[in-house]
Image 1 (cartoon, rainbow, N blue to C red):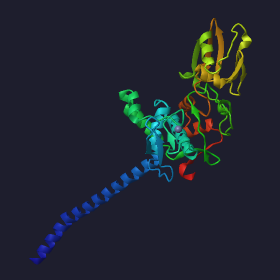
Image 2: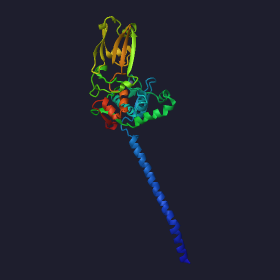
Image 3: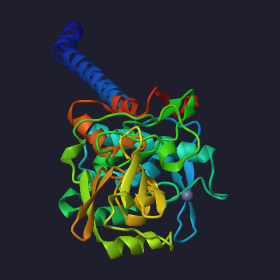
Image 4: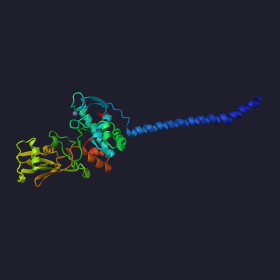
Length: 339
Ligand SMILES: [Zn+2]
């Protein structure tokens, strides 16, 4: 009888309990495997989007809000999302927006190292430091259907270039940029005078003529022209019948106007642009009856990266590194932690 029970329980064990135990172990093992796979995937994803960058330096910056005087301490890349969305249209190509993100990060670090403000690293005024817009204001200016996707696109471009900065001889560059070069960029010495920067040269980009910023004109009556020039040169006199009294005298290497004769005064192209409100110094001056027409190519000072040039290069297949190296000659893109 005892033997019968031993055989019976052994039979039950072999037929039912053992398979059940084995199955449990298998299930457990496969769960572990699945778990491992999920973790691996997450790590890969992080590596691809570089969202886990560990900023050793410059992880936060002190931003001065010029209207309120408040100084806000904010994460560098959070700040950059606000800058990029203020500086470049969100419908530009991903690689152009990434180039803008790296330019903005570089400009920010340059400002931290070359401070303008006593209690802050940088301010939110584009005329002083770098444009900045609050997320609320930015979103309100986009169509409702595009708000979420536009902001996500900006965040993606900042995240995927985390830690990247543009350097020349190991130091962050002064990363000037502008809207549209008109096909050729300008030397900084022709805009602001002073010293030159080896990485800011005259470079050409094809395809910028397709953008609205490319061509513009300003038409002024004789009186309007005189009144604008008189805001700086009160004694100005022009004989409009004499072609020698209204004449472009000289051009820069990038074919922008270097100097202009307005009657008894000679003005630089930059000064003329400012006084007459022209979009760039690349202009023609044409007499049309009693009016003077200024036909302008490009938008902005023309130094460094052209934003429409970046977009057009991205459309033609260039990545953000190629775009940056086209507009800033001889630079290297480095990790911020290596500075
Ligand atoms: Zn400032």
